[in-house]
Image 1 (cartoon, rainbow, N blue to C red):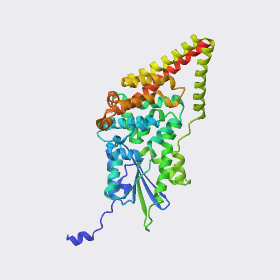
Image 2: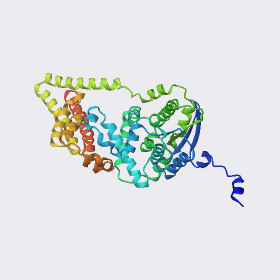
Image 3: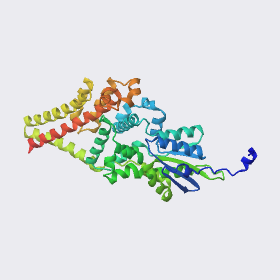
Image 4: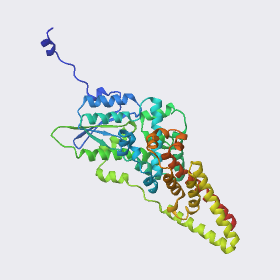
Length: 418
């Protein structure tokens, strides 16, 4: 048979994208004349990386959207971005908890990478690399991870907050492999949800802040970006790469939500205001402590002096002990002792903040500390060894020691006065 005869034979049709990715979670939503192809991925699966590459090689897309916020995107493409961290500003602005949580999440991902021999989020990196090579628009549609953590934290009560932080610390500092059940959850869901999986399943509020709100936020961001896509008279198509656990919720919000996307995004990123209860509690507590001292001196100089000394020694000693356990400099320990008795009376003199700032001034982190930070925080000893993470440990343990001291001294005052 000649070459011309071969050319005249009917050629097999190229597989459609749905046929090509038949074994992958896939949904297509058409909204505002834009076709959104939602590809559900597993953050620890080589098959998901291949699915992203196959989709982008097979079909022309006008844009690629990924389940990343700007902070996580920068962390992925610039692993050394932590060297730009301004620790003084972090501590002064009260963001120590947020930074520590981000480091803990990063450490959890490193453990997964070492165990599974694939970097979590590799499919996102594949989408980013392809978009850069093809000069395609890249949309980062996820909500800022710091906002998500703060809204999650504020959505639950104090007891569940303690369990939440305990679960996060335990998932990182326990030096053992991630079990098979948790890995299976990761293959179906979301990195943040997996880290807090035990608690997300037990609390509707926690699940709402971690997952449901982000589904709605990402849908709003897709609509916002799509409104800016040029319309050149041809079908516009966007590949959306998200964790499989977000697929159903994202598809539903993308199809049904009617509120203006900018207004919706703004509402979902607003940080809850401080509760009046917390403010009033602090004021009332400070008044009670000062009133207790006044009552003690009114009852006799000896009793008043005893109460003041008991307060100073309990709060100062335990605050200083927390700093010492954190490996604080001797001057940081002294600063913790001095500031701890004043912490409940004046929030701007919080013992953890004062001690951490003194520690940071005396033992400034080096370039090597920042470079090794991601590796160091994967182990308990590493948090103490690295000067960056040790400042955060100093902040938390000093604050914790002070809190225990306040509790003990408060009971002692009540016993003496009643």
